[in-house]
Length: 305
Image (tube, rainbow, N blue to C red; front, side, top):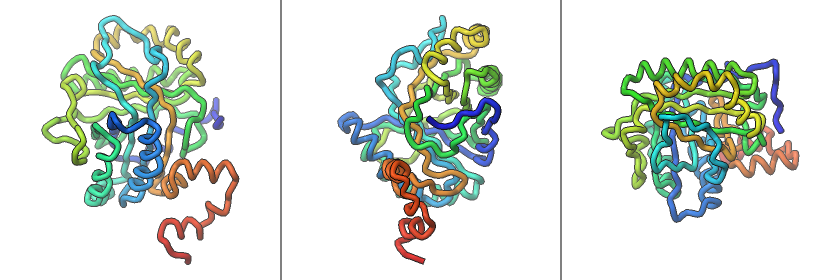
């Protein structure tokens, strides 16, 4: 298991991602899940990683088979209808200029989506996302670390984006202050507009129903499902029920089966350079030569300095 600190909070290291996006992904129904996951991690992932301008690229793979107790049922708040997902992706930039560079070359990436995705929806976060707490020392996770991780997609009860954002910020701050929460990252994207579908990937659906146009996403991590369930029964969480009922209309939670980091601080990780499974093999065998500058340069450029 990775190192978890009870005294050090690593949340500040994410502040360099000034502009972000959170993209929901749904695999094509006739692509087997293992083929989908392998292609996404080891073919699509390194392709995306090499698009210029990127500062941050993380795939969160979601597990459809986990138990139904990921988030408590609260009167008046319903799950999103017909909402299944296979992943959530963060693509981030250090500046608008970098984002423009990426966008100019991104057709190479988006042309690949039709091979595995039935639907993708890119929610824009022009002011970035916010990590409120992060007790994990590893800045570039690549796999299932054994901790209990969930993504919670939350639909606003009203149409006022500012009011919803204020509530979600206060709600997230309350949760993050509890010691049971090892990580909390909050995404408050702009309202999604079906008239401007994103990302611009051909032959992939990018449309959302009205109830998913104004949403927030919470990334949460706990030591175990038992810790998570105990937290939901705690006074800290139950005291938020009334405010949730006032501001939230829909909630769907998704279990995370693995977190894969391909670009961090504008630098390719080993997963970004070689593929996620290849990076795991290099780590497992302690193949330090594969991390040397000359090997990385050869794999990146095709030449030896």
